[in-house]
Amino acid sequence: MRIARFVTDAEPSYGLVTGGEGEETIIQLNGDPFYQGIQQTETTHRLEDVRLVAPIIPRSKVIGVGRNYADHVKEMGGETPVSPLLFLIPNTAVVGPNEPVTLPSFSEEISYETELAVVIGRICKDVPVDRVEEVIFGYTVANDLTARDAQRTDGQWARAKGFDGSTPLGPWIETDLEPEGLRISGRLNGETVQDGSTSEMIFGVAELIAYISQAFTLLPGDVILTGTPAGVGLLSSGDRFEADIEGIGTLVNHFRN
Image (cartoon, rainbow, N blue to C red; front, side):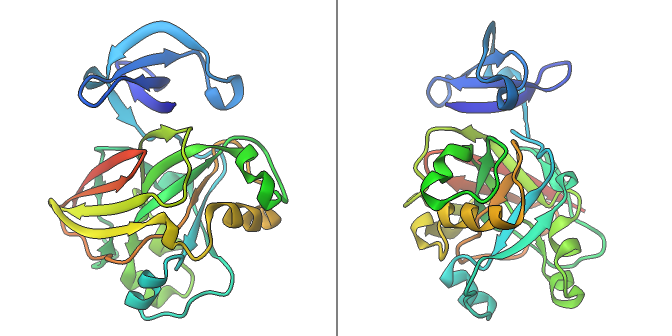
């Protein structure tokens, strides 16, 4: 199932996206599917008649994973981590599909990073690897924007990774997906700049969630970013970036000063 959040002329609602490309319909859901399950109403809209927003605003946190693709580690000149490298992102960093992102004034080097994002569906702690599937609600596409200059100078990554608008998510959450071996790509102004596979992760989804849940209690709606393949580069005002993951869809954002 594809679960989206959308706006017509009121508060955001959740919806179930059905139909093929170009013919999608969104069936409005009753309440919050994270707590009430999937309860369809009789209200439907054409997808083109609504505005999609971020499919989830995390209840408590976004957890990022750095340097989780070997080729990306090489291009950044770092060392392969022996355990997952984690950082926290505030939920104020999250924006949705097709939303313009204002590049922060404190940085001259904002880069794009296409990433598979995991959305947690239930409260959990110390999850065994073989039970990780039980706590996943679904998957979406992320663009983990990074202020490279701040990342180099600050020591900690809070400002470099957590500025307002630094975590676009969308276009929806796919609940029925096997995360291994998915093509993950990014296009900058129509040119392919990232092209990899989730099979290239150093630490896979199950391993990451088991590891992360040893440190943090995970809540419904929490989001985990799983790292980016090689090909990262810088964004400028006026750029358009398309982050695409096989089986989910394409997250598009524009950037401005």
